[in-house]
Image (cartoon, rainbow, N blue to C red):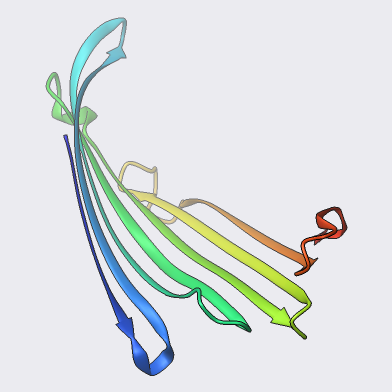
Length: 147
């Protein structure tokens, strides 16, 4: 079962758009534990915020984050239950220079936290960073520079 809702509104002061989204999912499944099938209910809830400006001739951006709370409940034992939080932050931007060149960049940061980790100070995370420079004429996509 999945429920989703979103709301967006312009922010005229900074010529951008603000949006918020909410998502909820319930999954009933089975996992194999010690060679036995065990019933599992997984609840996942996500809330996200985004500010974006995708209509500019000079600077376009998309900045935001979402947080996903996941709870796994096992029917055979409460000791197996798990709770995790995924923190996802992102920035995407495109800067157009002299109406001919585009400098595109993006950054994603994912942080996973859980009380099930051996200590609260051990946090599993990954991040990525990407930059691309290309001509806006569309004639030579093979000449785009990636960093």
